[in-house]
Length: 180
Image (cartoon, rainbow, N blue to C red; front, side, top):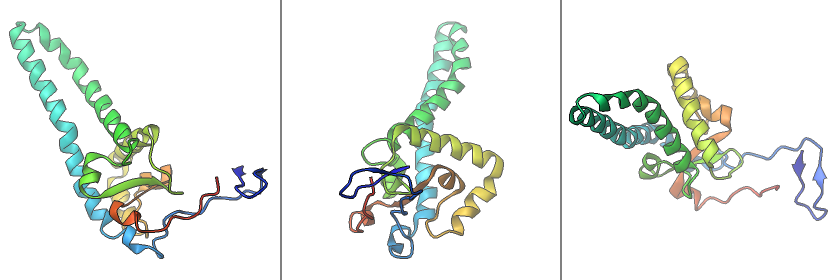
């Protein structure tokens, strides 16, 4: 069911689906170089995520020496805390005003839903979890999918209904009219 933005302002039940906001054939500049820059954005994000985790492990190691081994009991919480940190990082970054992680911002990329809406926390967190799950089981397939579609979407992008676009170009491309 979708909302009709016409003069009646009534709900419609005709099965109408919103069109894709970003057409790779009308605006190929939105997707030019996205695949390559996504790889570099991913590497930058791994550094951003890894630095606090490594510092946390170093702190626990030193704390364990200072407390004569008692502090090393904190190592059991380091791995779950690392996972939570990564999920919160992606959720907060993609759910933020720029809809992009630090790596994506440096590479001038932005995550949007297929109908053009910005990202939100749950979408960002789910995007990260689904990425890691699909890469764990289907690594080459996840990357190959992005090479054979016009929007350069990866497997988890299809599942979540997201698209990564060039941020600087988006400001100059007219958006499709919203139906809600």
